[in-house]
Image (cartoon, rainbow, N blue to C red; front, side, top):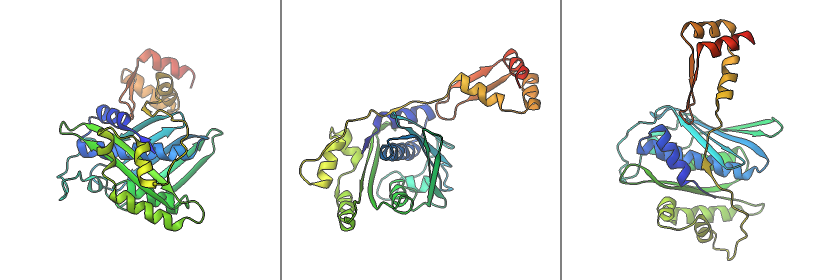
Length: 271
């Protein structure tokens, strides 16, 4: 389970995302946090979703230390609400594409898995990934609440997975998820994710592991941006010098790193 309200709001603020885009990104950030919790020894979890919808590709990353970040191509996308009054996340994301997960271990080993999108609503797609790629039947509930001011008020998610011999129980949990009030509404009203889990499981006392804080933080830096420039062919660096330097803007946090002609000339000496 993951409570990602602050991270989802930070993502919306950084990318100046519309309500429907903020909901989509918030759900994907939550999905990345949930997947990262499954793999304690992982260094990075990355989810790529491109359903050929108007929002374009979305990427969310989570690291084992609780750091989250995300980027998307069209953050200002705007769509009419669904007939039930909810944000049209599925229509914005689309479902003609893939839900891809990349897991990078500390030793550099990379594991990848992917499934076709089910609905573009993200929660169903994450459940599909767990069931088909990880071979773990799972019930998933994700929620992002956008307020009247068009800003994220709450975000979070729960995943319940089947243990050996518990195939029927997952069906029961999925039904309880459908009867549970929207997670995001419950969170903004003061409920905790632990309370929601206890309500869904209704198995008496549960054992809780130590909490890990989740927060939006990028991994970019001027040094890493310089490393990107140093990987360019010599001819391209010379062209950048003619253009009076270069600027690299991070897709995840919008930070801009400016490199002068002098910086580029020094770089050229080491290429």
